Length: 408
Ligand SMILES: [Zn+2]
Image 1 (cartoon, helix red, strand yellow):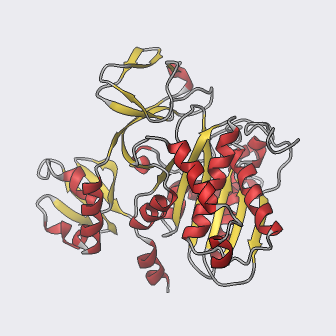
Image 2 (image 1 turned 90 degrees about the vertical axis):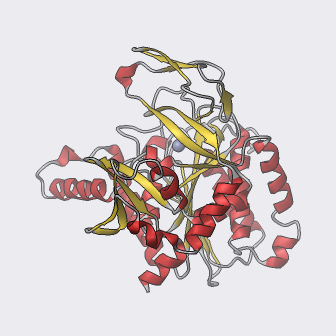
C-alpha cells in the first residue's frame, strides 16, 4: 500500500510495542512519543514511523533521543478504542497501586483472571515508561498522539504547567486548558506527577489521512523546539520545517489559540447518548443549541460555548466537552504571578490552609473563601481536585526545572 493511500484508521494487524528509537549518542532531551493509546487511532503510529524513517534516511545527527512506543497494541490489532476498558484512564497513583496488587495476586495464583486486556497493556507500558525515565540523561518530553471521531482543527491537551504551555505554544496548535480537572487518571497525569513535560495531541479525525500529516508536523516542530535537530540540517530544507509549520497553520484555520474546558458530558452505555449530527471540534454554539439526546431527553448548551470532542463512535466515556476562549491577558498574568512565586503566599488567605499531609495541596473552606477561589488558584498554577467535605482541594503542579532540582 502506498503511503498516500493509507487510511489512518486501518487496523494494524500485528504491532510491536517498540515502534523505533533514534539515538546518535549525543546528550540532549528524550522525546518519548506514544501512539495508539486508543486502538482506533493508528494515525500517530504512521506519523512517528514517517519521522523515524526520515531521520534514518538523512542519517540525521540529532541531540538526545527519540523513543516511539505503541500504546494499546491489542486494541490497535483490531481497530477498536479498547477491549475491556479505556487504557488512557487508571494512571493515578492509587489506580496503579491497585493494578500492581491485582497483578501480584494473579502471579501468586490467587486470581488468574484478575487482569483484563488493558491491565496487561498498562503493566507493559509502565515498564517501558519507567525504562525511558531511568535511562534519560536529560529532560524527558512526552507527546501522546490521539485522534477523534469528529472533524476539526487539531489541538493539544495537557496538565497545566508553564513548561507544558511553552512547549504547546511552540507548536502553533490550539491549547485546551482544564482537561485534568474533568478527566481523572489519564496517562498525562502519570507524567505530570513526575515533573515530565507531556502533551496529548488530537491530530484530527480518525480516518482522515491529514491527521497523520498533522501529527508528523507536530513531531518535527517539537524536535526543532527542543533543539534536537542539528542546526545546519534544520536550517536547510531537510526536514521541511517551514512546510510543516504551514501545514499546521492551514489545519488550525481560525480556531482560537487557547480555550478552557468548562463542562464535560460524562456518559455510560446506559445513558443511550447520541450526539446531534454536524458538530466538529471548535464548533461555536449559542446558548440553548441542541447538542445531543439521551434517555433523559434533550441536552442543550447551558451557555454560548465551543464544542470539543463530540462523540461519533460507540466506545467512549465523554459525550462532548464545552469550552470557552481564554484571554491572553490572564495567561501573561498567570506566568508573572508564578514566576514571582506568589503561590507561596496563598495560605495567608482567609479560609485557606495547606494540607498537612501534602505540601503541594491546599484546602479551601468554601464557606469562607468563596468568590476568588477557582480564578485565583488557576492563575497560581493550582488545579482543582475533588471536593473533600466542605472543602475544595487544589494541587500544585511541579514545573520541570523545579522538579529536576528536587530530583538531584
Ligand atoms: Zn484517543
